[in-house]
Image (cartoon, rainbow, N blue to C red; front, side, top):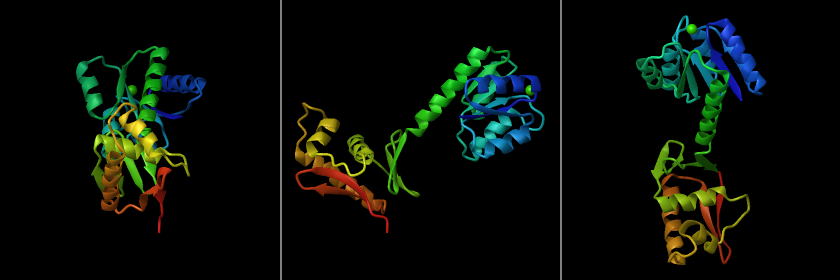
Amino acid sequence: MRILIVEDEKNLASALVKLLEGQKYAAEAVYDGQTGLDYARSGQYDALILDVMLPGLSGFQIASALREEGLDVPILMLTARDKVADKVRGLDSGADDYLTKPFTTEELLARVRALLRRQGAVQMDAVTFGDITLSLATSILSRQDKQVRLSRKEQEVMHILMSLPPGYIISKDDLIMKVWGADSEAVDNNVEAYISFLRKKLLYLNSAVQIVVQRRLGYLLEYAAC
Ligand code: CA
């Protein structure tokens, strides 16, 4: 886990580096806004700790610039001013959390852990197979710039198929059990209907992923890139 600290009070910056390194994070500090933005743009960091009042660019400006450029690295903003307006401005500019100076080291570490956990959760939010990606948050199945929304059951079926270990085939009964539950009235035809909806959507995406039926065994995904 790499953390970038942008803080012009050098004593505080080096104390933060030591503190984070003591927790096995890789941490580095820069001392002005423009350098902070340049470093953060490299995309090499798992989290940023941004002071608000900095020479060059402010923490607000750095956060907005990163968000405008589509970088979603988690940001913890350090503000010296305990004013609601600053907190709101910090969050509006794209920070995920803020901490008012002075703060305790325990509190800072707890906020950093929370940020990194959230980041982990975001990354787990999508599954990829072959040329397609399924976002579990939005139920959108996409291939390059084409996308299609799945219904809840379609998403569940697709998620299971995309998560199968390589070479593994899931039986129709297992699929019914996982998606519709043990005491549901779902019958084979129901599964077949959903498989057929999903095939149409894969076709619409021009995907090279196919849902394959193995007689008596069940279903699997195959990816045949040309
Ligand atoms: Ca400062």
